[in-house]
Length: 225
Length: 77
Image 1: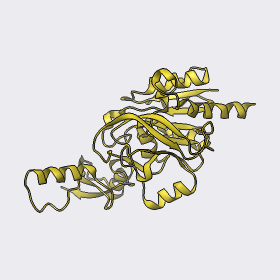
Image 2: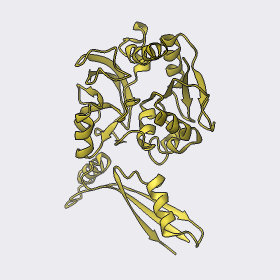
Image 3: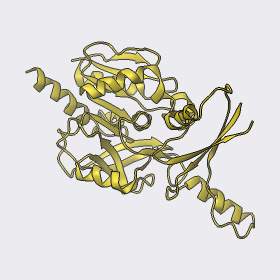
Image 4: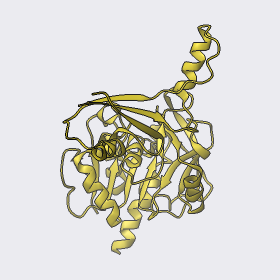
């Protein structure tokens, strides 16, 4: 099993993501730089971390979405390789068109940094199979632009197809229908504002994020068994 | 050729920044401000041979996010 974490200039959660993947998978992820043209061969999982890529110039995630490595990430996602984008990584996924919608400035205008309760809406996905449907989990958020927007038709489609992975149980940022994380149509791309990589072990204040990584990693184990 | 691209939020998309500025204008005592919406202007200096189609493509691929924003191209001269 081979995992990778992509670092853009301004990423700041790339190391946390790397440690989370290493601890859960038992194997060191490959570090990939935004300017690399190609991803390493044979990747089983790609993570786009949080941060402020390119200083949030133009729009959060807009510059990173057009960086050289994203062409390879898009191609890998289209081949079915699991891709997780957290926080700024989610913004990069929407800006690159891999996920529908957009992430706008928080409705309250303030940076939100706290642990929030989330409802697991879909426990059948590649990323959520280790959770129970409807379960409440506690995951930290830290963002200024997490206000998920899509038109009503897109939102209805996402709900109808079970593509809302997580929903906020508190008012956090004004997201349409309290959406905290969405899946692509194929189910191999997940974007979410909350940071599961910051909730891997009790010393971090909670470990509810660990099962997200366990879900993906156990799917490799099944595939190769 | 100088080109100005005006990027604005689509009607119906909530603009929390605009709302906060609206509130601040009222706080300063300005009356009769019905609504405030904040956009972005991008000024380009491009070769005269740049086609309208190319300008549209620049807006759609990068300068505007078509999910939430509209754009208008103004050729300044």
